[in-house]
Length: 513
Ligand SMILES: *Cc1c(COP(=O)(O)O)cnc(C)c1O
Image 1 (cartoon, protein in one colour):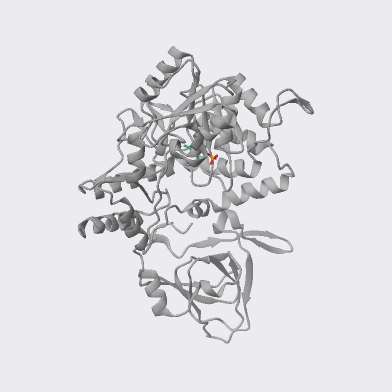
Image 2: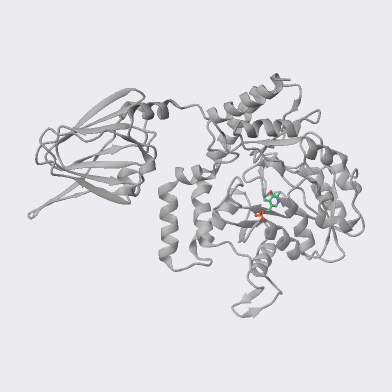
């Protein structure tokens, strides 16, 4: 609501007047007309004729003023431009956006002004000094960039998300129910697949799929050593043996030749990971899986909406696991996950396994577990799913901005996209040459820029797997990436200015040498 364009501010809203023989009812609907829910109402009254009130601005608070009786003039200023509105009829409300200097003056002696405020009183939200306000307003250039900005996504969806949460609370149904079924159907369609089963998290989506495929003790499962630990933990969870393999130098994705070389008589499954939102090379992996009779499970926890040769991830393997952990491209406000598959039998088995192995109520056919997607999480995901492609476009724009801003730096290797891939860029990983990664990380941290490393320790060198007999040096490409990789801030809600701020800080580091 705050971005209506500069041409038409301040925004005036019309109250609906419902006249009848006994008088008028004047109605203002918060979610439809104000663009915010109000949490506080107050009134200005008993003002001296011609009086004025202290001008000020709010950093975040949005308000709407309605002059119920009499008249008042309100001045609003942004970027040095001032506009004034005379409110003299109760049929019109005036939106007071955050970040605008405003002043109420020239009250008529009988004026009664109602103000609807989006939040409770908070002194720290006030800017009472005009010079402070101008300094605050012109401080447009960012002075720090958080690694992710998840709260901005929900702020952009404030009303629909709050409405969805409220409707779950009012429904009285707190496990399963319509929001989960609706989201599962929408997400399956989004993935161009037949079934999506909501589960508790991405790790359980992987391990329940392996269990449903009958994989367990004595079986080997091949996966890239450069991945989130959950990829391997899912295999351990079902009692099978993870077999980590090395990755491609430029993409960090599973090396198909390395995978093929590790297939034994005990191999039962392959888990390619669509790491950083870039799909793995699925055609040769499918050929290998078909030739050796392996279950092909996509770890798509970082790749919601990515495409491989035009097909969405989640629609390519025998099954695919997604995570809705908050930082993922599609994330909720807690844990969540989904198993996506075109196989009705696989979907039905995972659904049972995730619900105590239940066939019908209290009839337990399988030794299942409890791993469900909750209706609150599903309701939020449903609202966010409608924005996902737009947010992916913003990720892509940020990546293009990074690429053009950093491409000429000799000490860096930027991520690449294969010709057949439409990546969704969960992460923007750069490789820093000459053992300068840690120094660049410290330099960016000192500049107020959040970074991350995906991943500092490959799976085959993790402590929890120390008894597997895996050695340092076994997967040299992944080990080198672990020393060189740095993930720069990349969130759809970052602004181009914030990305430029990061680019300048990276350039400053290399210029300084
Ligand atoms: C996040 C992630 C997982 C695990 O998902 P959770 O929901 O956190 O359990 C698995 N694999 C990859 C590649 C991930 O990024």
